[in-house]
Length: 405
Picture 1 (cartoon, helix red, strand yellow):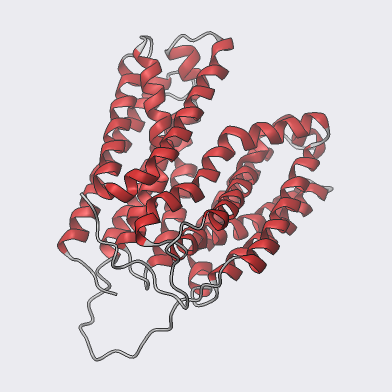
Picture 2 (tube, one colour):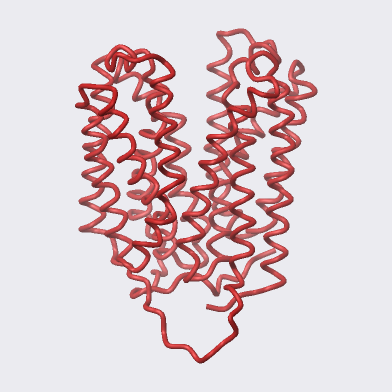
């Protein structure tokens, strides 16, 4: 089952017929850098505690203030920059991001480090609000799924390789070098994107004849997708925060086996990203529904049979679904939204996803946390079913009220 692509964005330059692999790889690398920096303090916990004269809670706050900043600023900044060249907005956000992370690397006090994380969070939120929209404008409709999968793969690789690499640099040199290297790479990417990637300025609104005051038909599905992203992220982080006790306590895996299991989880995520692109182009609606249904089954197994060999299959299903979800969702969201609502749609999903990230660990702890991790997996399964229902509702509303740009 396919989805109409007639509503893909218009701009001052048409999307090329060829697959722009070079441009997409640059954007994917930028995604990798930003996602790595977002959660890097978690991987540098002991080094940053000593270097900033704080405690583990203080280092955790460096992540929390980032997420809160993204939630508060993403949509206003996306609206403020909506009529500018998307290439320059992305490059400018990366440049600010680079300066903020360089300042984090040099911060002599914890208070200054907090301030730099706020600045980096502002840049991160704007970059993520625009990067999918900009990538969409570079792609022909038939390449949308594969293109967005390639761009968003940077986030998956960041969790698999970015954090371990940052931790290794901190151990060999200093935690400040970890942030400094990210800053240098981000600045280089900002310059290359500004100078080498295609210009994309949204078309100015044309004068229209008087029409009904009804809202854009894509707003309903966009709101449902945003709600699905919130519930999905809540479910993911309610359990992933306690994945180690889940594997050691509930599944009974030896401590030495846990890194291998987590590597398998990450590898399954990369497979999910790789498969999501072709699936999004061939079956954009059905694929997302099937992935969410499979994830709900995986969480059910982790809740009821974590101490059986089925755990390995469920862990693989979980990793695959996490890798596939974001490119599948973003591809379908870009197809459903109009050129007037596309930036708002992208920014809105970024905001609600971050709300889920912030709330998920707290709810996971409330229902069991590290002491009883199967309570968290039960919550995650219920949340996944909720996200599945919201996605189905979004698709049905979009089919029932098709829009026209």
